[in-house]
Length: 293
Image 1: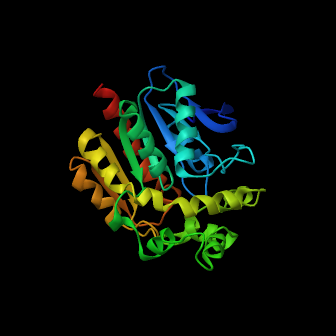
Image 2 (image 1 turned 180 degrees about the vertical axis):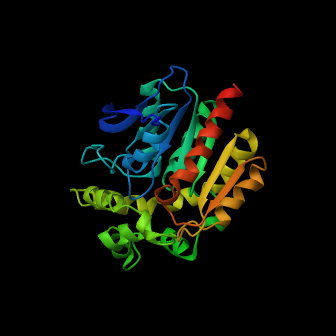
Image 3 (image 1 turned 45 degrees about the horizontal axis):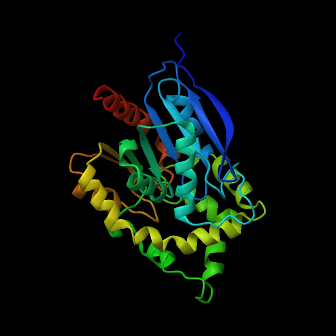
């Protein structure tokens, strides 16, 4: 009986501007394997990609860092949390690894981090895989718009953000909109909550939440970047996402009409329920990028 190859994965830290960035990296079987940079979302970390790395990491070089304020990455107490700073550290991480050309997987917070990298270094981007990573106003639900509008001087604003950082808030992000909750392992939200409960982590998330409007304000710039550079793109999206609904996925086709779009009947963390369907799409996309070099 033939057993599918499961990737070997290393787990390391890199020091970037005083931040100890934790990352996972698969060890593919061939030296020229395509590279996929996996940018995680809120409130998760690189561990959200563990199953994808197991499935695809023997054929491709998959690299998944934790941002400051997430997962196993260690940031100094005076680190100023903003999306620009998350991008700064991720940019330094990419440079420290010597990556010069790769596909970016952008999920949730990974979109504002990834698009900032793309703006700074368009030569790095061989292609985009976008999974519930929004870049369009129509991709914001009413609840997301209300959240983006929160400001530190608004009564009750911080309490609203902190309510999302509870175990119920974290679990809901995994389970709302899914087809079969039994397919969603509890490990994801349990591990996410462990990291959210570490000292200083809630304060980091509050700061990032108040900075989220900076991403919406860049949407026009990111759409212009897409039209100018026309990267190959695979859009895979959980249609029942309570934050970034289906119109946000379809909107990418305005600027990238050749993009490949696949919608799944699930919620925000689409990989949790539909990994068996999404992994072959990702593999096929990476192979096409590699063959077109």
